[in-house]
Image (cartoon, rainbow, N blue to C red; front, side, top):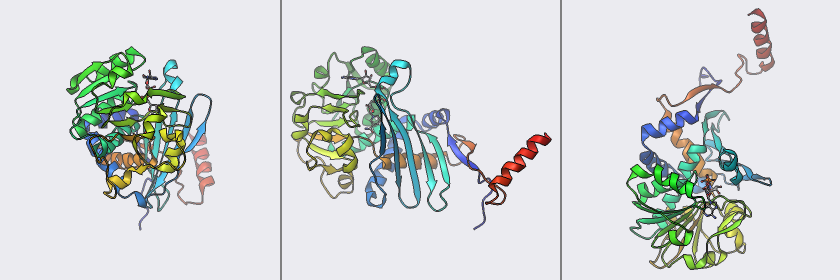
Amino acid sequence: MPVPENLNIVPFISVENMMDLVIAVGTETFLLELAGYIEDDFRRWESFDKVPRVASHSRDGVIELMPTSDGRLYGFKYVNGHPKNTRSGRQTVTAFGVLSDVDSGYPLLLSEMTILTALRTAATSAVAARYLAPRNARTMALIGNGAQSEFQALAFKTLLGVDHLRLYDIDPAATDRCRRNLDRFGFRIEACRSAEQAVEGAEIITTVTADKQNATILTDNMVGAGVHINAVGGDCPGKTELHRDILLRSDIFVEFPPQTRIEGEIQQLAAGHPVTELWRVIAGELPGRRSETQVTLFDSVGFATEDFSALRYVRDKISGSRYFNQLDLLADPDEPRDLFGMLLRRQAALAAA
Ligand SMILES: NC(=O)c1ccc[n+]([C@@H]2O[C@H](COP(=O)([O-])OP(=O)(O)OC[C@H]3O[C@@H](n4cnc5c(N)ncnc54)[C@H](O)[C@@H]3O)[C@@H](O)[C@H]2O)c1
């Protein structure tokens, strides 16, 4: 096979280009198409290399690496989670990622993933809810109105038709912002004074708060029969959102059990507590929601295949577009083993200039 030119170049999607891409595609269409990629990859779950993400914990947060491969492509994401960050003007979660060619090991794409993570987390939640939420659910309580919240709302509108939101955050300014940002998307929105008030009449409850502790955002009495809980914010050891009693009466659906048992709400339960892998439901092997009274819980922590799907999707989308830069990322000497010679030639060129 002929060696392509410009082996040094890797397409790079900056934050600006990611925003322009999302705007050009349309946020709702982006979520819908991305959900399709995520669902497809869940359906071929067994073709992926899977490990719990590699987490480096510190007092105030965590830095994680999330790798996976389907044998043809390899992807990883770098992501952090630091709930205290918003107090110093930083985000709780930032991320970037790489997609590579397994055959040569060469990166094919480097991308910002802070925005992409918010989109893929929301799309994954909505995919799960399509199998687990009560039929024709229209009302969602959205507890925690930070960076992820509007994305969650839009994904549930686009994929499920949820058009009534009941918002709550301990910080009313966050709720105000979320409400303003969602103004033009056709929701009926109610700002609530407590989590108890927010869950009234909601068929779906999304918890997406950030706090580095075993918090109790929902207590057992707040969850009525037939509700679907989309628990997004509990995603680290010692960082959960639901009272244990809720877990004991829910049917629990998870991404990758070895990771969720460490990081998810189910870290509060015995190691053998039964859970259902979401991919088996998506693949049609096991049922999702079975009755109108069942409480279903998607114990979301975020898994590497979802980021792989997201990178795969944006790589397809930028093909032939202007939404990326050419990044000089890989050293490419004229003769592959003459890496040092390349340095010497650069030195000579600089001296001559
Ligand atoms: N499961 C996943 O795949 C996934 C992906 C991304 C982020 N997350 C997690 O989602 C959570 C939210 O992320 P973010 O980027 O929106 O964070 P953020 O800091 O921007 O927003 C979190 C919001 O939660 C609110 N909050 C904190 N404690 C609360 C409480 N007791 N009741 C109500 N509101 C409360 C805060 O005031 C803040 O507005 C984080 O914990 C993050 O780690 C999970």
